[in-house]
Length: 260
Image (cartoon, rainbow, N blue to C red):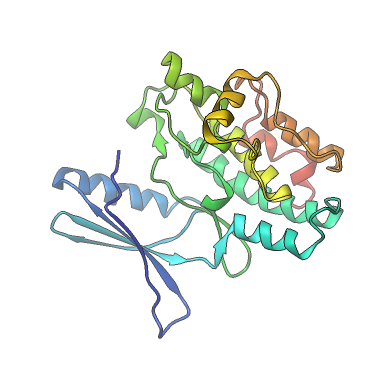
């Protein structure tokens, strides 16, 4: 797995653009793989733009056009403008559905390329100046046919509150998981947009993992969500990955289709 040597954000006073600079220390044989990976990232719609790469000795320096913020910051700011105890309004759901549609487009492309992101959450969805979503942080993503067996991945990785049941199962029973793990995490991200909190946020990490792994229940959905939103989220949160919808199918749901 790629080891992050240095993650540095810098401001350049003479421009309004803030580059995101990432420096990796790598063995020489790994540098070509990193460069090839970045060329591929440039082709992914809805992903954070890679603006350039510098290779100096064994250092690999990647820089991005830095967006204005993350989806998590945007959701919290939007909800803070409302009464936090107020019902989730129709207009707010429309905004969340628009962002969800954009994220799904990116996921559909990734999954079509047999790539599993493995850490979908609102903090890893960045916004540009126009409020468009950009997927970011591909540090633990895997291209199935390259890094894993064709069926899927086996590594226990991700962020626990957004982690799917099968990812936790993979570490215990050494079974494989695939693209549908991203869909569960995406559902958690949608819920986070709507409420500013991921599922089981009131539990510590260990308790949350046990809840995801041992419980037969789905994440709690607020009563005041629209029926179309609940249907959409319920199909993201099917515990059996075989019953969980894929990204392309979710793009046809009324809750996100109405804004396409």
